[in-house]
Amino acid sequence: MVGGLFLSLGRPTQQQQKACIARSGGFNYDPKFHGASSPLRSSLGDDVAVEEQALSESGFFVNRARVLLGAGPRTFDLARSALLSWKHFELGWTFVDPETPVEKGARFCVCVKEVIPWLMMPLQIAYVRDEISGRGPTKASFGFGSGTLQGHLLAGEERFSVERDENDKVWYEIYSFSKPAHFLSMVGYPYVKLRQQFFAHRSANALKRHVAMKQQRAVGE
Image (cartoon, rainbow, N blue to C red):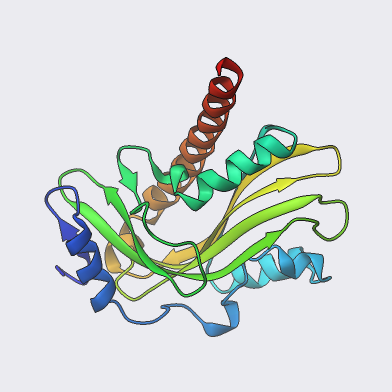
């Protein structure tokens, strides 16, 4: 750890990531916001606008990106499988160990290349939601949210989810709320927010390409 951050000059190895996780503490944001990124809250009647207002008043930046992947159960299954194997992080300049289990309580590192060093940012999966027949008009949904741990640049949560709606369309959504948890992110927060939006855009495109490629291969077989 250097200056409160987990850094690596080269692409982080599994050993380095395990060391990062072992040295990270608990969640670094207010317990009252644990699980606040879950779509389950809105389906149970919680007012999303009120909750997002509370997040904003507490200094969090809310970011949301949503993209259409296609339609039908096959597309949904492919997208769900992609999230389970962390394909949405395979962008070259960022990755998560694909062996990380997607289950509540699992800890992992998001590894990000920033200029010269790599950053290892520890998180813990706060919840997993997997429904074949969702509430309301949703036919099926899968998603999980992760909270930041001590040693992360930011404080907050991020959710990745796929949903098959009443029109059989399949959507991929990224939802996050965060605020600076280190002096570097405080100083460069405008840049950090741009990077979050950039990641959301690239991740959405990566998942869309992955699903399309899998479908094309299936047609060719």
